[in-house]
Length: 125
Image 1 (cartoon, rainbow, N blue to C red):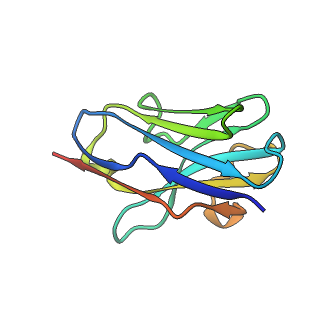
Image 2: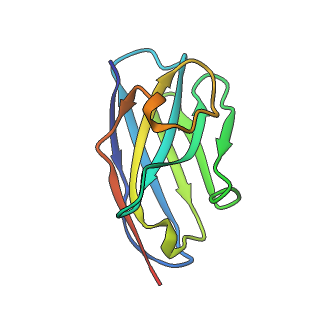
């Protein structure tokens, strides 16, 4: 089992930045892929980005490429999502997720094994 706890959400103006954190616990992480998804009101949950815990390969949705950066701190068992140049359309609940294997391009939420409870990001115009 893997437990995931997100933090760092909040209210920010358009053009601003936020950094989300996801603290992971419960098992060995070297064989996991970690990811971030988001869900805006009235919309389906969508893939944002993923990182392979061992090796650090990353993958981004086109909508956030060049603005968001995913990273991990092995010593702290924590994954980060640095969000820059935020837009009102980035407003959503952001979820940390984990799955076994090495494929970082799995964008379907139902194929991920573990989820955090989410943290709300609100971007005002």
